[in-house]
Image (cartoon, rainbow, N blue to C red; front, side, top):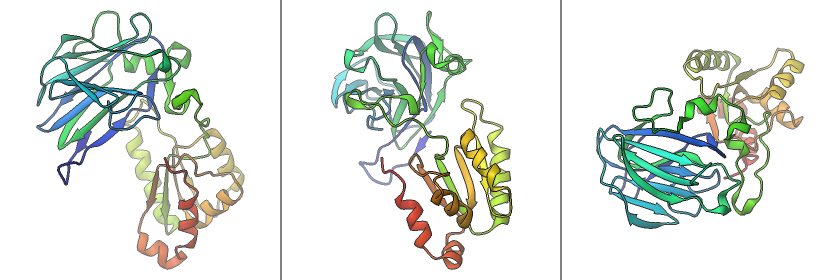
Length: 290
């Protein structure tokens, strides 16, 4: 993960898509250059600025831990080439602890009962910094009694893991169940040929992604419409298509936009020149804003 801030107050955060409900798990983050970073865990609905609300917990390079926006001294400073480990125990001590280069820094937080039914997801927030996550299996400093995230990801949800769609919202309310017909990413292309080209490139890239595996699909005219619908029913994370076919699937409520987080217009000038912007805006307006 990398962030290059354009201003003094620019922080950018990310969160993993698999979180822990039960068990004891561990992951590492290695700082790759100078800059500011804060590592920790958060619920699916908490701020990406980890450690600033009641459902996230962070440890920063300034030697401060944070929760609900309250900062307290903890551990030591960390910077370039340091490896920070995060230990989340949801079985015995119900706590969060950190390590620095294999040295245990002690318990940082107790996980409150109010979060007992919420998954906690690895997270980081950066300012002019770059870090590298290591979810295993070959972590550097695995503490006794803990498992790397990669081992747990391959297990069933009953073993303590939840996908991002299975996390619960604040206040104990469930998030809407994940709908496989709603891709996380929609890429619109002006022509069938360009859509096919992008689809092929994604096929090349996705072979390097195993945790989690990525499902993508091509939606263009001239094919078997029934097969497109069956593909959506099986679940798609990345959809590539032409406006006409995508619009038709959306109008039939077969392709849905409620989980879309990346709305990509490739060759946008040609898209608008050939199709106008009405359909593009209509699709965009169906995205549920987070």
